[in-house]
Image 1 (cartoon, helix red, strand yellow):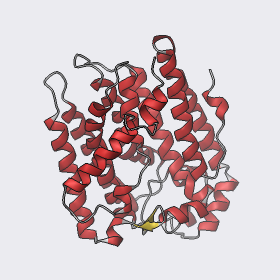
Image 2 (image 1 turned 60 degrees about the vertical axis):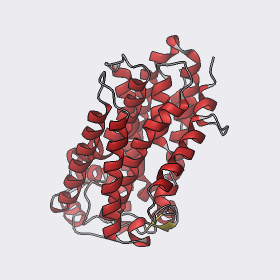
Image 3 (image 1 turned 90 degrees about the horizontal axis):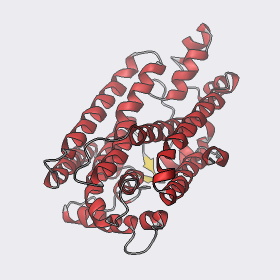
Image 4 (image 1 turned 90 degrees about the vertical axis):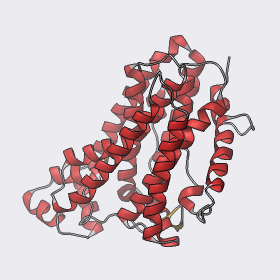
Length: 338
């Protein structure tokens, strides 16, 4: 029986993460473009490729890391393109403490390289596509969702803070890619697999939602960490209305507070309102319910593959712990118990 956690996330040459990182470097080098040292291209937690690997092994007990990694390159290219565009739209100046791509090079190059990577992602998936199930169609749907989400985000500057709109943007821009990374991995597990269990879809969906909400919480719960990572605290309220903390806060406020909230850049005033209405605590309670739902869905694996069930829980704890730490918050490990 596999040690799935080591098989996927270990440091040996045969482990998925090592194989993927080597293939990723080979892919970027093969492009023969002057962007190999950009921080957005080099760095990353590889969440989406890892979810693809976990999705694959949820339905397959045969080691095939090279096969999964080749498909996962398309997912990472798509993700990296979205990062370049997101940093450009948000006008972020730093990522991981280093200059963002459009600062290091130019806005035009960021846009053109993002388009290049989107096309390369689809081209690579199409090369490996099969008649039995069109993975390219799933990838194209992700691109469509992310583009729609980006357009909605830009246009949101002209509207008041809306919780419904914020959740829709999260679903289009973040959940679509994270959910389908897990789903695609599952579909890769066997050429005859055409249907995906609801549990696989639900786990991917909830993970995407939770990771984005924690990302939205970060500027307010841990501004120092956010500033170090982004170059400046990401609280441009006038331009972007996608942050779920701001949207939730707007719904809590009194009319005179709403009026000021829509016209302020006073970060401390916003943080006082967040504390007054206990917004972070409320959102964290919602996240805990989502995590409990994820764990309920993972029971699908408990009887069919107990070792995968144990190792996948370990992976989830690792990823959520990273996200909670970036928010300066402790994770409740009790959520991951049976």
